[in-house]
Amino acid sequence: MTIAIIVHGGAGGWDVSGANLAEARQACERAAAAGRDILARGGSALDAVEAAVIILEDCPVLDAGRGSYPNAEGFVEMDALIMDGRNLQMGAIAAIQRVRHPVTLARRVMDKSGHHFLVGPGADAFADSIAFPRCDVSDLLVDADQEPEGLAVEGASGLGDTVGAVALDAYGNLAAATSTGGTPNKRPGRVGDSPLVGCGAYADNWTAGVSATGYGEALMRVVISKRVCDLVGTGLSAAAACEAAIRLLEERTGGEGGLIAVDARGQVGWAYNTGAMPHAFAIADGPVVVGN
Ligand code: ASP
Image 1 (tube, rainbow, N blue to C red):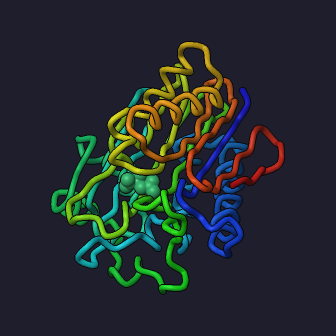
Image 2 (image 1 turned 90 degrees about the vertical axis):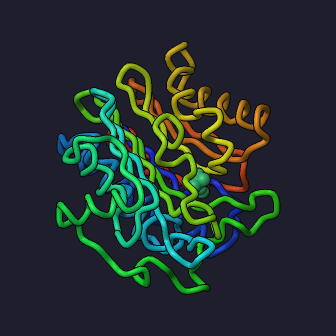
């Protein structure tokens, strides 16, 4: 069975000649390479997507973990989702504060909480109950000159630079993960598409794994990631399914966003209708390919 991984650093109004996009592309390249190394050593798709997203959460120009946008009250509230295509298991958290790696906490929710989705104070209490590492809000906020620049171009306003990864391992298992600080200046308690199953991500060994990014208020209304999986199930390639879902998003909601996908045969696809969406992928032992 072939292995494959694709990652993204958010669909937004990136300045395509700017330093931040170059840094985001490099982070995507490192994330895809790290995930591919895990897959090449026989590691699981879940481990690969978690490791890739951790690298992206550490990148200060991306809106996840360190570099998350503050909300309207200056706090950072983050959302994340991870999903296992073998058995449709999932873990999600929303409005979590003071953790460096929300994707890992989402995985702990899946494995240890007895539930699938924890939010706000309950997610905090769960994190503390398993002694999950906490940080200060200052560890998540970055300098103004390093701020995510997803708002640079008119028309893509309201988008962040959410991160995500999708992988297929050598045993034919798919996994997907998405992590975000949400949209800039969001109302406290606002949750977008990212932690919602089928919206921010979906993974099903029978069809595909998908991670989404963009204007969450639109993406959630078309349940976009599950829709891509269903389109793959009707025979579309991962690439064609992503294109079709972005067209549908535009036609039905006028929303902007981006998608990455890997299908059960290891074909990758992506699509976006914003200025850019830094991404990187690797298939089998081929090179890591980086794009906007
Ligand atoms: N989808 C994310 C949200 O609405 C933002 C993004 O992808 O940039 O929270």
